[in-house]
Amino acid sequence: MSRIRTEVRIGRMMLRTPVTVASGTFGYASEFSGFFDLRILGAVTTKTVTLKPRRGNVPPRTCETPAGMLNSVGLENPGIDVFLKEKMPFLAGYKVPVIVSIASESDNREFIELARRLDHCREAAAIELNISCPNIRHTTARPGTSLIAQDAGATYRLVKAVRAVTKKTIITKLSPNVTDIVSIAAAAEEAGSDAVALINTITGMSIDASSRKSRIGAVIGGLSGPAIRPVAVRMVWEVSRRVSIPVIGMGGICDTDSALEFLLAGASAVAVGTGNFLSPSLADEIVKGIREYMRENRFGSVSMLRKGMKYAR
Amino acid sequence: MKSFEKKVIIISNRDLKHGRFILSFSDKQIAGAASPGQFLMVKVSRGLFPLLRRPFSIHNCSGKDGRIDVLYEVKGPGSRLLSQYPPGRVLEVVGPLGNGFSLPEKGRGVILVAGGMGAAPLFFLASRLAAERSKRRIYALLGACGKNRLCRPAEFTAAGCSVKLSTDDGSCGSAGYVSGLLDSFLNSPGIIPSAYVIYACGPRPMLQATAFVAGKFGVPGYCSLEAHMACGIGACMGCVIPVRSEGGREAYKRVCHDGPVFSLQEPDWGKM
Ligand SMILES: Cc1cc2nc3c(=O)[nH]c(=O)nc-3n(C[C@H](O)[C@H](O)[C@H](O)COP(=O)(O)OP(=O)(O)OC[C@H]3O[C@@H](n4cnc5c(N)ncnc54)[C@H](O)[C@@H]3O)c2cc1C
Ligand SMILES: Cc1cc2nc3c(=O)[nH]c(=O)nc-3n(C[C@H](O)[C@H](O)[C@H](O)COP(=O)(O)O)c2cc1C
Ligand code: FES
Image (cartoon, rainbow over all chains, first blue to last red; front, side, top):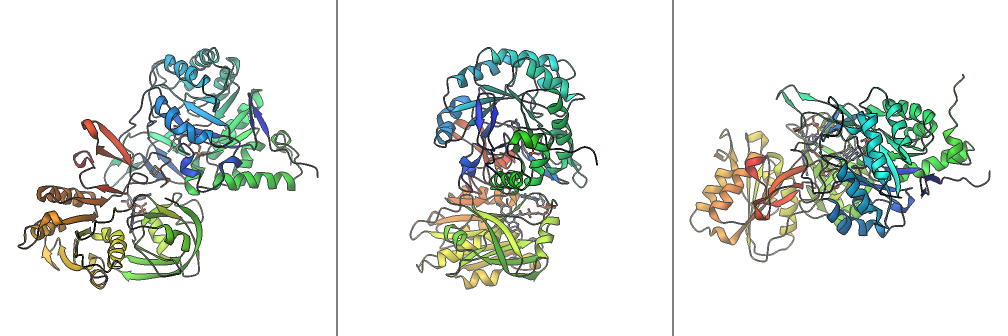
């Protein structure tokens, strides 16, 4: 068979391979650079950054659950200034596109300010709008909801406002904690998002019966890992069929086959999250595994793979 | 600081009784890079349970073949699985990780203070210091709740330490906490506290008490802390502890990346 093309385009960004990493699970990439060659990745996605430094939530911030984990990190990050000065230069040294994840603690103005700053940053290939972190509360969403990503109108307004200030590729990161994720994805697309990324964590809790306390300091946290994968694959499948912008799929990817589930469900690319903790070189293994699978099953391109799911028996 | 992700082969996994085991494997790269106080992230299962790796200190590194020992206690499902692995089985480890102990300046006396399994990383330090072949005095103050829980006193003696023991229930050595043993040791005639440095590891309340005693006598020192870890390499921000930073502002530091070794006065003990 002729050449296998693993490239995918997301907005104005070309990914060499359909594999990136999930924000918050890969630090600022330097933590992983000793374990594999980062240039094999399609893109690196950095830990969500906010305008001001954030201290994050009280420990303990993680606990293990059946086939998964809860976290209540609370977006601890050094703020955009330190990020640009101290974290970006390392990433710039690698020829790999950088997706910068951003969030605001209060209202849309912070998102806009962050997007403006990043619009001037040559090293940032794309901006990911984290409107779905279950560990912070947001004021612009409708009463009764706490996340922008739980409100199609709020999602539309935010993406539109950010679209107005940047030409960079915009990826909107969606929450699974909704009744109809398709309507939120459609709102992001309509407002000019170049892609959607899903899923962020599912809110969850775990109680230690002997101490009668929550196992994490913030009581409620976000569930990630293989436990959430079927939910994530279903949502990626639903969204991919209904929007025409690329979908970046994630949730519990921990080997090549689980990454392929997302691509077969219609994702254009996948992100390795909690899996990075299980093995720091997992993303590398998955890049190679996907290529191997494409060769063996005669998929010449990722777009063919995306259409490769069979329905009838 | 270089870390490696390796598949190693278990050489032995010996039952030391009372729920303790010592596991050995060889890896020249990890052993070559390791310093006392550093740890490994060990994959304890093949499947999805337990999902996350478990952190274990390097108990000792020895020999030309890069032999590494891990001393561990069965606490829950992960350590129980580990204890069932036979020699010859492949084990996935990442390490060495974290910042180890800053070694003492020449001539300074050393006091190792261990609570229970806290002795695990201190033994590597003791054997490194023994390899110096200097005249340095090394005391090992080992504490535990009872006689059976005392951790490898004979091995510390063999490594050249003067060993003193304490048990909470008085079944061996002096009765009481090991921080109390430290207090009376620093008070004993002929001991000049300022000529020593403390290296402590154990449960948090024991470390807090040790920090208090060290502060009282003006002895500098370090402690190795534990926290729940997901990644072990500084990426997830999960394993933080509150520290006292400059200007009194509250801050968090990652145990896996900024630690696990901290100065005794750095953690904000009151907030832990
Ligand atoms: C830097 C470091 C070095 C350590 N060195 C040693 C050592 O040399 N020998 C030794 O016996 N133990 C050591 N520990 C503790 C050891 O990691 C835990 O006992 C082990 O993870 C328990 O796993 P489990 O599945 O058997 O028990 P679980 O049922 O999961 O937990 C039992 C206990 O271990 C704690 N624990 C569980 N998971 C973790 C985790 N991922 N990180 C930290 N604590 C956890 C829990 O809070 C609980 O108190 C170290 C911990 C750290 C952070
Ligand atoms: C420890 C931890 C921290 C995370 N931090 C962020 C974050 O800062 N921003 C974000 O958009 N998602 C964050 N996430 C969510 C992941 O990016 C991902 O969407 C989710 O974990 C599902 O994928 P997984 O099951 O493969 O981990 C975090 C997840 C974990 C486990
Ligand atoms: S365990 Fe992930 S940052 Fe320390």
